[in-house]
Length: 245
Picture (cartoon, rainbow, N blue to C red):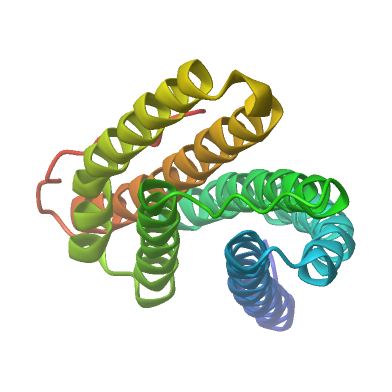
């Protein structure tokens, strides 16, 4: 049987572990939010480079993407460390898993920002003067809006805004189909510039995939919120678990 002093020691040690676990999880979430802001800025820069045909902005995106890759790896390592050290359960476990998923989605978005930037550099290198089609510009605007809203939903823990992002995903898909139809028509009517049209088609696909990753982040926000509702005795409202894992 433990003495009162030993009991007090054990209680104190347990309390310290809990404080450290809370601190580490708060720091983890802070890093995810900082990474999300950096990725959003890289995507915005890549789209601006596309619109203005600016190789200098495109080069900045490439430099940023390498830093983002390393950042995502550090977040994943921290998630594994927290899981191994504290063995979180229930909502704490969900948040660590969500942090890992979201950082992965953000890293993929940064990769796509680099792909867009690379095609801008090719346009500049070949002295391409064809303006960005209006439909592609509209797709870029819609994709960036999805990113902005999904990350705002993440920062505010706003399931309603996240649901709105998920609903808008179909609209982005429709815009991408419009862009592809117009650019395929351009290939038929002006085959001598096929490389130009193909680069723009690939850019459209990258932008649509950016929006898909934004929707995945929004689904993770809903996943976390539903977990909180269930933990407090309510019923979840139905988006299920996030896609892609």
